[in-house]
Image 1 (cartoon, rainbow, N blue to C red):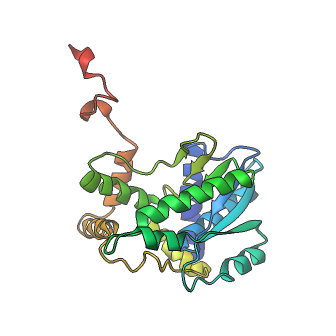
Image 2 (spheres, rainbow, N blue to C red):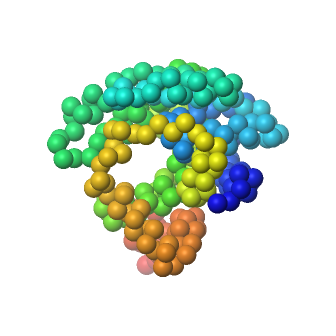
Image 3 (tube, one colour):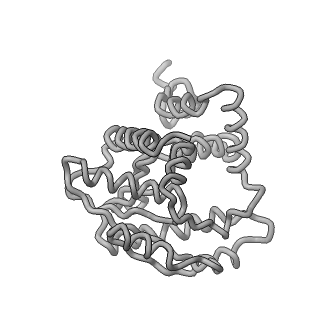
Amino acid sequence: MESIEQVTKKLHRATGEAIKKYTMIEDGDRIMVCLSGGKDSYTLLQMLLHFQKVAPISFEIMAVNLDQKQPGFPEHVLPEYLNELGVSYKIIEKNTYKVVMEKTPEGKTTCSLCSRLRRGTLYEAAKDLGCNKLALGHHRNDIIETFLLNFFFAGKLEAMPPKFKNDAGDLIVLRPLALCKESDIEVYAQHMDFPIIPCNLCGSQENLQRKKVKEMISQWENEFPDRSSVMLNALQNVSPSHLLDKNIYDFDVLE
């Protein structure tokens, strides 16, 4: 296992590159960091706290957790952790768990509805808390997996943008870990001994398409090392004229 210094340096470098490349943070920003209790969101918070200290600009951080009222959710863990860090935070209580379980047909996965409900609640919270930006913990692997899920199952070329505006146009959403490897985050989380809270709502669903795609990428990596880096580069190196979408390339003018 790499030392904490080595893996921290790699994550700082990748996060810093994403922040700079996609102009994520500006002076005076008030950023709501969505904290789920998983390794990714803990790492996201630590990365932004680091850059809050070293960046030549000033920005605020507000950590927010959505308590979805899942059975057995340890409500004390995040407040204790955040109090110890000295980070401003807000715990939002909303029983989306009940809604998801009532609305999802038996045998169907809960992730889609859960995600929509959670996202809407967090967007509203950001506005209520006076935050102009919201940060999510999605990393490089999440982006690649989403692209392949859309490619194979949804019939569209779409991934997760590192920065975008919400539909209402009044909030900018950031993914500062967009260039970070999940394997580095895993090592970092182990070193940091984060108080991980498992997602009991969807974590036990064995037939998720995302899980199958993750396994497929892992097999590719074993046979052709660092394929994920190549795929991430491809998502940053798009040639619209070599695709088939008339909405982004005017084939008519070639006449």
